Image (cartoon, rainbow, N blue to C red; front, side):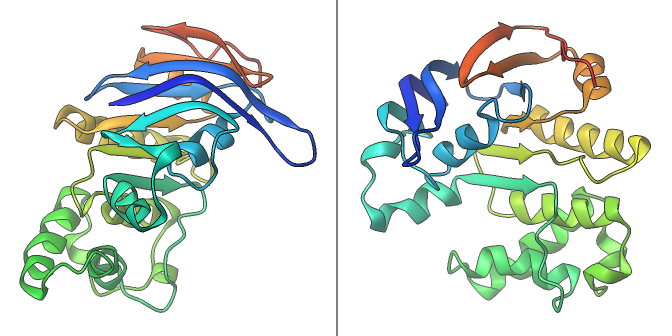
Amino acid sequence: MILLTNVSKTYSNGTIALKNVNLYIAKGEFVFVVGPSGAGKSTLIKLLMREETASYGDIIVNDFDVGNLKRQYIPYLRRSIGTVFQDFRLLPNKTVYENVAFAMQVTEASAKEIRRQVPFILGMVGLASKAKMCPHQLSGGEQQRVSLARALVNNPAVLIADEPTGNLDPETAWDIVKLIYDINRRGTTVVMATHAREIVNGMKKRVIALENGMIARDDEKGVYGYED
């Protein structure tokens, strides 16, 4: 569950990134966040992950009071959130298996848990046969699948995807989104910021549009609504 109440964010240079945002995302929802560049999408994601703090307002994510969270509890919040980015952010000198296992190691999971969970997740994203390869040996779509596996390996309640298809060709992009949708159907809440008009229009999911730091639209079965 995600709840924002009267949330605003103003940066030190005076830039207003978000202004009086009120938003509720229920457990298990699939939500697209769209809007022009500079509309506040990235700031919203950073606030949810506590990479930034709000200037005003309250943010609740997975029962964590994000704005008032003490520093030592921030890792617990982030363990409940899986993240996927446009640029994959894989460790280049580690294998596929090691990249995914690393996400469990930082949570101090046991070696037994890692040996059980990593192959399961790699199988889920269709990469069981690629476990010993390094990122440079993979296609862009396969690298994004590794990123997705890493985001999911700790069973997060929420998956945040920030432009996950931005570097992919249209066919591969659809494959990744279908995989994310399959994960959503298993019960994971998905928040996906995107400029992918055809994907948003084709999925017919909830669409939240940000413009000038404010919510301009919030449609249950929405469309992208912007020209390329």
